[in-house]
Length: 396
Image 1 (cartoon, rainbow, N blue to C red):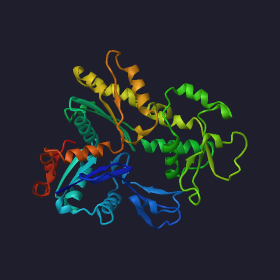
Image 2 (tube, helix red, strand yellow; image 1 turned 180 degrees about the vertical axis):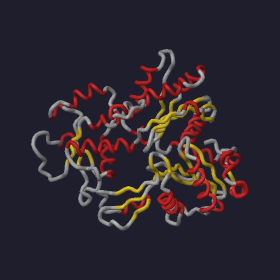
Image 3 (cartoon, rainbow, N blue to C red; image 1 turned 30 degrees about the horizontal axis):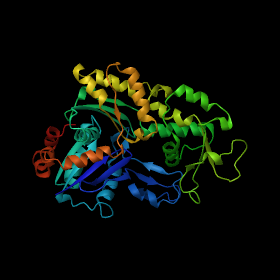
Image 4 (tube, helix red, strand yellow; image 1 turned 60 degrees about the horizontal axis):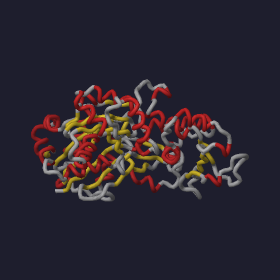
């Protein structure tokens, strides 16, 4: 029997059979400016000739799966002939969902997996649980870890002890990649170019040029310097989707500091935006979101747990999710935690090689573990007893 692992994120779906490699595919549908009527699903994004003004139709809102019509279409595409050719009657699925998911969403998911697709068996699990499983397998001597999963909709901090999550320590910060991209769109639109409709392009800008500052106020001072004295300034060439398919940063030696470019390319000049945008992960209050930043939230979470366990959590902090790819993110988090945590406790923050797929890899390992059959719910069992079996079996 094959096992399909689907880490169903609000922006990326990480999917693959437990024997194979992972594919990272957009978990949404798109409409392009040029062909208004045609809808593109998931990885058909590559077929869109001109992704400027690209319109996203997302199955998730504020981190929860609410638009089932879109999600069904994406899943139909993923499970179908073009992609994974799933033989439902002979396949088990591991699928992720957010912490404290709503019961109505859980029940809809059970129905779709068992009644519509008719998977042989299914396991619904939190993304962080898969990340923790991966970590514990890679470090068998450790009993505790703290998963910091910073994704598209929000950032979760979840403590795990011996693979069990400690619910009283789970925290959510409502800052994720979507908010960062939207904020960058607003700043650029206010300062230089109207880009409020260019989510796709500005998301790419964010990934290419933003970084986490190690000393925010010092960088702010440097950012005010003029011209060539300013090492932070970058000129980003926007794509025109005819000759330039993908935006890129101009090399330092090609930058024109005084006057205009002769080349006719469209240029965004980015200075303090580069580090002020990811700064929101550390200080959401900068843009009026009255919540803790990640370092404070980690300390808050750990302090709510039994005292004798606290040192183990600080030594085993695991970063997952796309925001941990910002250059300098791990170093800044470790430095800020160091100043908040009592001096006699060591702090160690682990950034996996591929933080986006780390939880998926954990699901792959879980599918191969001997306990896996004990964890899933079989279709016959669900058909006989309904949602209650899933509620009892899945630790959500």
